Length: 184
Image (cartoon, rainbow, N blue to C red; front, side, top):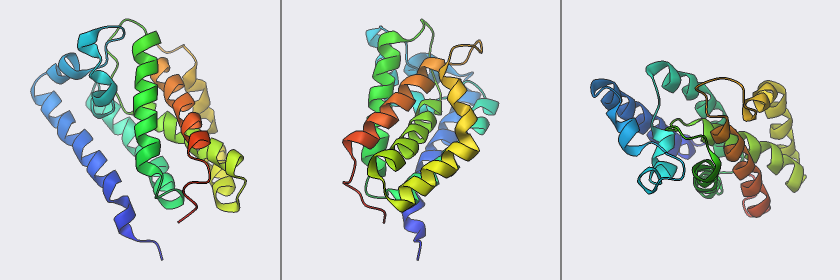
């Protein structure tokens, strides 16, 4: 039977994102300037860790919530023992990629983590070649496959670099953690 306890971390993550969003709204989004990721700037390096909790608007936070719930739940269901390590790899490596190569702007949002979980779930199905991860990978590609276009530059004001480096970090996490967290 599926325990609700495996989703606790996801509820906490969403709670923190929305608490930060409320503070950001109340302060005119001052936290984004203080804690957002600013590429190649020592003062913006802390954004590697804080970027997923910050958003540019209420709509931005709302748009990230459903994919966070869906993809985060899939990771929790199929890779409970790996979710923390995979997420840390995605946030750290994805954020460092944006810090090194991103456009000179403040980068905020959880979409790097979302694209990272997407890359992780798809790559995990391929590298582990087991029924459940493979089935989940197929489902993720069918329902979220078009989001892969988000890793390409195109929409002004959208950090495609966060999408790209998050996805690459997710694939790396799947390869580096393969077979270490059999389906729970």
